[in-house]
Length: 67
Image 1 (tube, helix red, strand yellow):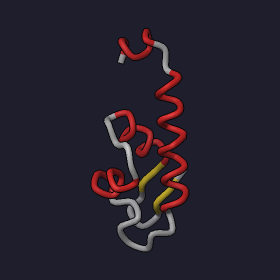
Image 2 (spheres, one colour; image 1 turned 180 degrees about the vertical axis):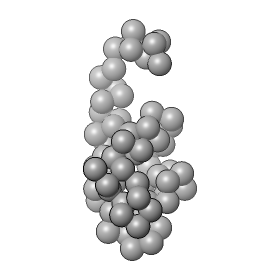
Image 3 (cartoon, helix red, strand yellow; image 1 turned 30 degrees about the vertical axis):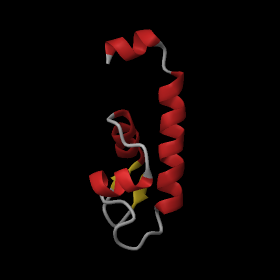
């Protein structure tokens, strides 16, 4: 789903950014441009980032080695 319409950023891209080390909304802004224009995506982008980190934390060691 599109999270940031202004920059055409999807929840998948946010998840990938989290897997690549994005920890904060500021990281997403730098890497993907979210919140840079109108800012209406901030809440949803933050929630997607939080969910991505929760999922990453639940990944098994075998899944992490395969990546």
